[in-house]
Image (cartoon, rainbow, N blue to C red; front, top):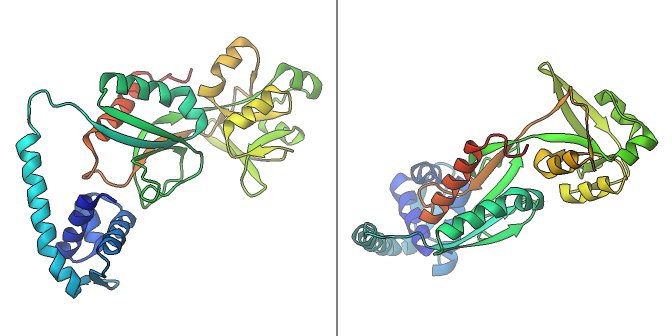
Length: 300
């Protein structure tokens, strides 16, 4: 637990009168505020606040702890003011980042490598995982997700756009034919992401939505697995463009349905707080945004 941040959260909740108001002041999700309070109470071994739906009030232990937390924060802020402007100050710290396997391999690991080469005082632990994780419990500083459905309890910064391609091998198409329209996909073995036994691919043509319900004999929760199956002539898959651009260029895969645009997804950085963000994390985020904005066709 970051005890300094927990102390700051506790003081803000008391001064603002509620967790929601403290979350707004700290630019932090309410779930993160609640988590810090619970961990602080576990650490001191006592309940600090009487919580109601409208406001929070101090317990006896909370009244005793509050002035000590204020002294701790004043000391920490004084040290930051005294030392924060030293010439030659460099970025330092350890960052823990989670991201899907495909995006990590295709793009993120290269940008992170560039960043830490520029800032050798920063170290990064990459947790490759396509599933949503609890950032506080897993000690995650940053989660990169490709989705249009964001967790309302987290703060999101949009980094860019992920475009997709429907593709298959020449051998599969030779045996089963080439679909000319999204509706033709229902007659093919479509490899899909695990989604309660049902998969829908969404297309657009001339701003008209075109959802297609599909079936297939293989699904997975990671696009790299489906890509390997596609290359093995098993079926057709919907892949991020960054994963298959080289394979299409080499002729190992064929891009299908060029007249129909698969639904675009946002690439988002998710984190718990802007105000409490370490300098190294803020710098890394800015670097990732800069790299994507400087090359809008990065996945071509």
